[in-house]
Image 1: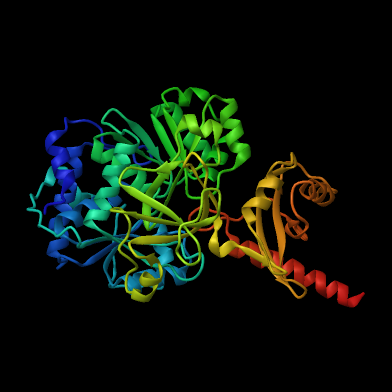
Image 2: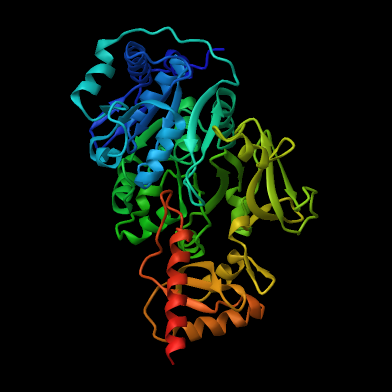
Length: 507
C-alpha cells in the first residue's frame, strides 16, 4: 500500500501556507513539502538508504523533521526523532539500540552528539548544503515504494524516567491511524491554524498536533523552542484556532507577563496533556473565559481519551471518555475488570497502539494483557463513564504497609493558598520502609509554611498520608519531556532525610 499521504495532500490542496517558521522567516506550501521530501528521498537513496533503514533527526521544531518523515514514508525507511533534552548516555543508547543508519542534526545541538560514531553524524539541517538538497526549485521526482500496513514506520523512544529509553514501535497502520482519529476527534480542518510549541520529538506535539493538522490541510506555525513570552507574541500575530500544550507551558504563558487576551480571540479549544493538570493554572484560564481540556495519551498510544470543554467545566480533572475506535478497561492485579468507582490499571486497545518495544520481546509481552496494552496508570471511572487518572502505578508510596497515592496528597496540598505547585514522592525510611514527602513551590515565602501545610492536610487526609517531610524549592525540576522530574526530586528528599538523620545521631 502507498502511505505517501503528503503527495496526495499536495495534489488536492490549493497553494497556501502549510508550514510557517517565524524563526527562520520561511514559509512552505503543501506542494513545497512534497517536493522537499521527494528531493530528500532521492538524496537518501543516493547515500544507500534502503527500505527498513532507520534515519534519525536531532533538532528543535523545524521543517526538516517533516522533510525526513515524509521522505522516509516515500522510501519505506524508519523515521527516528531523537529527544535532544536527554543526557548523553541516553542519546547514545537510543542511537545504538535503534541501529540508526544516519543522523541529521541542528547545528546548535551537535555538541550533544559527541559520543556518537562520526560516520553516523551526517548533515546539519541548518546548513546551505541541506537547503540546496531540499530546495523545491531543484525538483527531483521520486516514485514512492509500496509498504505493508504492519511494516515499521517509526521509532519514538520513551523519556527514560525509569531507566534507559525504550524504542516504541509504530507501524504504518498505527502511525497513520492516530492522525486520522485525532483529526476526526478534534474536527480538524483546512481552515485551522495552530502553533506547535511542544517539542516535535514528543508524540503530543508531533503525532497529536502537527501531523493531524497537516493531513487535514491546515497551517502549522513552528515555535522552535518553547518560551512563554515568545509564544504569547506568536499568539497575537497568528491568532491560532487551538493549542495543545503541557500544563507547565500554560503556566509559562501566564508567568511571562505579556499574555494578551487578543491572542486568544480565535481559540476554539485548549488541550493539555503529558502530565497532571495544574489546578491554579486551570482556574486562571477559567477566569479569562477559557477552559483547559485534559487529553490523555502516551508514547505507546498517542491519543486515547479527551474531555470536552462543557464536561471539563464540571469535571476539570477528568480525561473524559475514549475517542473513536479505542477500547479501554480498568483492571485489577489479576487483569479482571474493576467496578465503577474502584481504582484499576488503565488498559487500552486500538489501531493506534504500539505493537511493542524495539528489540525487547520480554518487555513487550509484560506490557500486554491479551490484546490490551497496560499503561501503568491507575485510574477510576465514575457513574457517567468519565475516567480520572489517579497515579502512575510505579509512583505508589507504600509506607508502613499502607498504600498512598501521591496524587491524593498533591490534591490536598494544592488547595492551600500558599502552594503554587507540589510533587509528592516517597523517601527511604528506616522505620516505615518508605515515608511521604512533599516538594513545594510556594506563591510567597513563609517561614511557617510547614506548620500551615501540615495543619491543612491533617484536616483532609488520614494520618499515614501526611507528609513527614517538606522540601521547599524555587522551581520544580523538569525532565526531558517537561514533566516534574520525580527521580531527581526523590534524590533531593532522600538527601535531606539523610542529613536530618545524621544531625539527629549527633545530638
